[in-house]
Length: 258
Image (tube, rainbow, N blue to C red):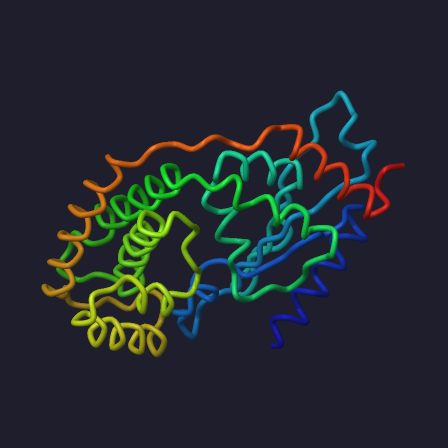
């Protein structure tokens, strides 16, 4: 299957069926992070806009579309208004979608939204998110004698992303290889490289014996990141007026004003 062509066709179909305009679509999850397994599905995430009349209705309109979910494809998206509200709150998914190395679609009008993202970035929100994600995955999936390499990598990736965000005051890249190169201690590189190679050969749920060296690194990284987040300070958010103007300009450029 040519995933890009299949996903593009699905996006065309949902536009026709639901009367929306897909502004941006990208891969999320392990395929965008660069450590997919042979049985990994495709997690396509998109942002769409509707005609302006839909935004003026008194009845609430759903701001999420779940279009496709099977063993191969997981396609869902957010309304532009929801996306921009979450962007102002520095929602981590916003920055991950925008940083994806696999982009299926991006309309020219969306560039004005992308351009506002750096003003919305909050190192406090992002680093707390990654720390919370790492804690949850470690607590739930790294407690037994046998663990999943996928979950090990999830924890390591979250901790490295927190490091990147704190040290550089910017969104972390999606590619795990880039995070490793920038934020992982050199002596850990051979171990993580072997893990990545094994995961890419094995299935998503293949159990693996615990790795004491990695367990020790994770414990130390938790201590480091937890200490660093205590020193962070929140920055001012962009005004609603700036985001409102960009939102309306997208609708105008897409011919959705009426």
